Length: 286
Image (cartoon, rainbow, N blue to C red; front, top):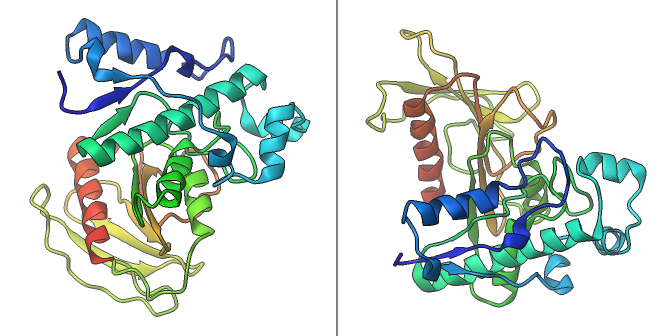
């Protein structure tokens, strides 16, 4: 038996028919875990759907009302990029319930995994990119509402930037000093500093300001000729968001996370893990 719980339901399946989104992946993961004996049936817990009041901790009332009554506009459904149905609404409410249950279990066991959810393109007032409800944001706000936690950290390793998550928690941003990082201060001039390498690569970091006032840090690799990655940051109040993603990919507009690592095409495993480690180390200064 695993020392933590896996959260799963057959109803995680999204009823969207023939679609580029692999809606059966959740069942396949569960089946694979059981077939390889990596997990046993007793390791799984089944979630209940989130309550409307949970969803409303994150999402706007008018948007939730449209979802529950099937009154999305044609434009809103087009943004969603999956065919609307009440069954789909239930699946997303269940995904949010799964993330809430995973959060509760993680507080008990230190670790929990929901084999579903992660719908990071959902904004407070609309859905995008196959994502109707931002289940992770709902789980965080529910834990805060219940007094279980005060602050949270999200680490998003999807190839696409977590634009919905960044936007939702940017709404809670409060005035503070600029986040200690490799970047120049947001309103200051460009500066540079050397950050000791983390052991995976013999590389240095250099800082410069972006033309639009956002901060960037580039991985300086003058000898290897490798492509460069960039880091942007914007400080958030009670939820710190990290997103590592392919820069030249969806979404075209990437609202700032607390830390965004914009990775170049074709980056290798070692470089990816080094950037992940650097981003996580930045959170210890907050």
